[in-house]
Length: 266
Ligand code: NAP
Image (cartoon, rainbow, N blue to C red; front, side):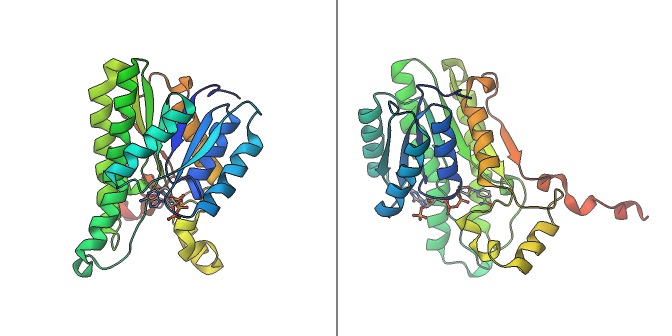
């Protein structure tokens, strides 16, 4: 399927995990892709090589460095991406971090950093993309990588939970504000996906079994399964969808503890 043929996309946090999966999927669908990375150029170049492998020879892709929470760096990144690709049609706000700790003991700077990357970064990049979309009057697509923790509380990860809850509101508010100008804004809410952010359990069979026992479908998700949802939402197949979060989570948002009938006393 080449649903994104000749579209230009910028994916943040694209050197690993879901972001890299999205960049590869978009490239397979015909898009030109700018892959954002924060610091490790070697890792970013390796990601770029994977993207180029699935692209047609005439398609373009590049890496663009920026900490998405830094306003100046974000502006420079958009100038570089648009300068190289000529225009931008799709932004994926994927970069994200989490920090664990008892909420009453969390240093304020840890809280600020997570919110700064997950929420402020999403805001700064969305603002830059929408400014470009409005200036060329051809519409565009903003997609946010949220989480099931947009709606499910995550004890000991307060800043993460709060940031993803706010991303839901940002998605809806921007969607409403720009719906009349051909700009669609949506989010994907992954459940537990096998990526580096989950290194605490993916390589430990006991911990992984414990995590997967809470998922109604009985397994963690793959990067490819999440990238497929992003590709759908980026494409014209989703032309009438805006302001929504699609949860791709194996049923995690379905209150798994209610699988039995314990609440009715049986
Ligand atoms: P990941 O591999 O750790 O991806 C996060 C990426 O963001 C990394 O490439 C990281 O770069 C980059 N990044 C971090 N801070 C950044 C910054 N300030 N500016 C630019 N890039 C930055 O983990 P992932 O699971 O793919 O996470 C991607 C997104 O999916 C996140 O928003 C996360 O909240 C969301 N998500 C993941 C899951 C899951 O189960 N995996 C579930 C729900 C939602 P470095 O590695 O170089 O620091």
